[in-house]
Image (cartoon, rainbow, N blue to C red; front, side, top):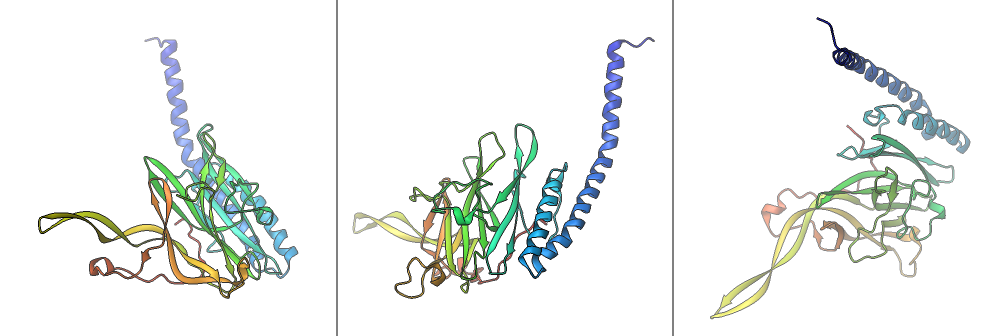
Length: 333
């Protein structure tokens, strides 16, 4: 039976599909080999960034490290590669695989920190992941808590945690970061990150803080000798609900206290250690009061009634006090 032109075309398309499917595992394996080669080449450079005795040696190694990292992130499927640099490099990936942020510091001889990094984010137009290098311009940024920033003008941080919250079907991303700044002070930030509409370009700092009109990120700058806690955790708040009660035939509206566990960003309030030191962050340390931001209806709402001890034993049962631990970075498992 003679084949028609249509049937021949279908056969060719089928053969092409089969060949593509057979080649796919080989291509993926090849990409894995390429990524492992990059990882192996970059590790000695990272060791030099951390351990070399001079600024010149550390920055020379970092320049090559940045170059290789950027090349590696352009490889197909590199978004799904599990980078393994221990705790030296922070790698945070959103659960919806919309973006990944990679950050690390270089420490100078004088104790100053400069942060480096990349954002790898999904572009809905090209249906690929784009790569953006981050440039630490901390020294040039005026009013860092109020400005919208982009990759080329970034308030450098090593991000320790990525918080994801939802409202009306939209996902909101908030980063918690740290940097050593210099020998006298260090800094922690609570920083929302978003992406331009129909684009993959990240924007750092969003107006997501209720009743704080100009606030785009929370910046805590304090003494290098102090330990300030900032973390996303489940803790307890005390709220009040209105109830109607009847007494002697009359109805009264009363507020009844209620304690419940809620996910929140907890952080230490900071203030000068001595009177007259206002505006000098090297003298700031925790006051002993814990503050919290709770995500309510698409906004972070400040609460000062986060508590560690409860009158309700059922709620209190699993509570553990927050530890003032050292800086650690979450990495992809």
